[in-house]
Structure formats: structure tokens, C-alpha cells
Length: 279
Image (tube, rainbow, N blue to C red):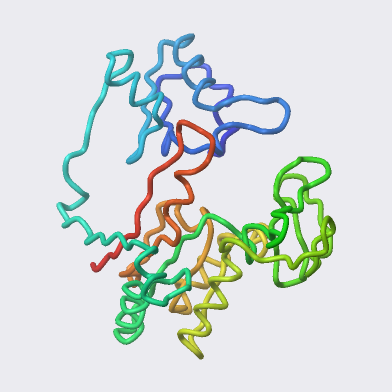
């Protein structure tokens, strides 16, 4: 079930399985505020039930508990059906910039995409930031527009030319001049909208399906079904496309700006990599 299934009124609770236990979505941000993992632990203690938490990338706290003996640790040392591990290539984007490539798509990823398209196969690209640019900044005084309610930097969306807060939904029109000093505003960072434009420039006529909070709006399953059924060449999205999807025709997965997750102010910040997969 969903997160709230942990409250199911079972009289003889014997087993709770928490798949992808590291997922932040197990923590409810609405009232009543709870973490499904903690509720599951509490219910299992009360009922004498067994709690099984599964993950390929366990949370720091869960792995620490397992290594210190607070809970059992069972590891799978082979992939399903003993399939070979994918080839992984990490690309240094500083070298790409020195070579004259200012895009978010590296040259190795571009070549891998070209090869995938020639073979008639599909690719999934992951970038955990929606919008066109992470923020706009004044080139003169360094001022950055912030949300008046949340005090976070506003994200630029090219589709409507507006700056938006991804926390409360505040929106305001973007300006080319700085409201503080009158300097020229520069666009900083990369989002899914900007990468979508780069893909259209690199591969004219190739259909790209973008899947993020701006395009999905409760249509996650429909978009994924369309991607599989219509064999759309490229699926670009945020964390929505990183949920253990299984598409037979997908042979390439790329993580764009992988180090973004390393700079969040949380000791659980994830480490991800560019992945080149050839089945």
C-alpha cells in the first residue's frame, strides 16, 4: 500500500515489508506528521512482528543500526538472474567546459544517446531539478531573488518567464534587470526545461518526454505507459523517473549534474553517478 498503509488495522500483524526504506517520501510533511519507518518499527515491537526493510542504497541511520547489531543485516551479492553489472562512466564536466562544451549534456553522453537512437532503443535521463535555471543572479551586485515567504532562492521557468518557489508556490515575473542595482541578471544552473531544449537542439526531430512536477500533475502512470507503449526515444525527468522502472527497450541511463545531490545541507546527502547501461 501507500505510506498510510502502515496504519492498517490488522489484528494479527506478523510481517511488515518496507521497500526502498531510504525514501524521503515515507516521512509525512502534512498533519499528522509521522515517519512510516518509525511507525512500522513501533507496531512490530507491540505485535511481536518482523520488520523487513529493503534497499539497494540504505539510509545512513539504518545501515549504522545494521552494522552495530541493532538489527540484522542480509546482503544480496549478486544481481537478479546473475546479470552483469552495467558499465558506469563518470564525466568531469570541468573538462567538458575547457573543451568548449557548455551544455549540461556531456560529449560522452551525447555520443551514447546517438548510438542508442541508431539502434532504435530508448534512454532515460535523470536530473533532480525542474525548471530552466536553478536561479537568476545579478552580475553586478550578486543579488538573487528570494521567496518573500520561505526565504529560499526562486527558480526560473522558461515556459512562462517566471520565478517560482518550489516550496510554497509563490510566483513572480522574471526581470532582466536587478531590482537592487539595475545590473543585468544572469541565469545560473540547469533544470529539466533547459536540458529538454538542449536535447531538441542536439537531436532535431527526436521526441523527448519530460516528466517532472510541471508536466506530470498526477499523470505519472499515463506518461510512463506512453513512454513504453509508443517507444519514445528519450525520457527526461526528476526523481519520478528514478523509482525502479523496468523497461525492456531502455539500454541507456544518464544522470545529469550528478553532484547536485552532494551539496544539500544534510548528512544523508546522496552520492549518484552518471550511468552508462548497455543490456
